[in-house]
Length: 367
Ligand SMILES: [Zn+2]
Image (cartoon, rainbow, N blue to C red; front, side, top):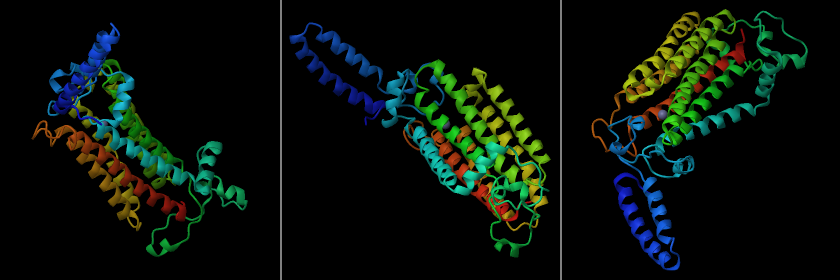
């Protein structure tokens, strides 16, 4: 691994001198040696890390990060830079590791036979429709589409918490959330890895990145809305329809290239935050409806932790703290975008924790 920026200049010069001597010896044997050497030299120079001042305009996003930039690198060099130190290395890895973590969680959940049965039931039978159906006495049907076959009504007394799980509630809203998180984390990693390639690709990847964030926010609504209002499905349409509508508006708005620039950083954050704040409406609604449910405080604690992680992350993203306090000091590690990435993964994990509580509740009590 080589260091970039000022460090890279030193490495580059040393490399250049070595190349120069090699080039001279080649020259004795082959007249084309000098050309060959110069080609190597310019290639090496081209893929060295550069400073903020040397960047093309489209890459000038954060003036408080002074060095270690990649600029206009070919795709192959950009891909291999995943193993080099530059100012995007930790941005790539924070979300790549988050993605791998969510793949692991998804696999762990998929591997449970009961849950596979639920997923199959979603694919083969579509939505569970009613909460009032009778209990099936056919053991096969009992496991397929179990949500609409549970007789017990919502249980609200703590002593009932020892009730053994009746059956497994459908998992598809849970997997929708896991898929949305994986899509967001992976597209973010890819965006940070390749956005140094060209202006065109940079704009395209930024749009995919924003779409990924929007999809993660929308899909995060699925488990709580689905499981909390499982017995009143009309609220699914109100809340999931509402957040999807806001998401479509956000994506369409952010497709405008002008809004991808640094100037609109706060505007973008405002759009994403307003989607998150929309969640306050169903949260208050469900808190009132489930006031006496013993799990209320646990899920509220998880979801408040999620909100705190996301809001703190957005605060770092917009304010560009700490690099604005000491420009150049946090180029490689510790700048705002990296902190924002870590907080996004922690927020998603808190939401995962809340979802497990919803699942356990519905597994035990149905509607
Ligand atoms: Zn990012």
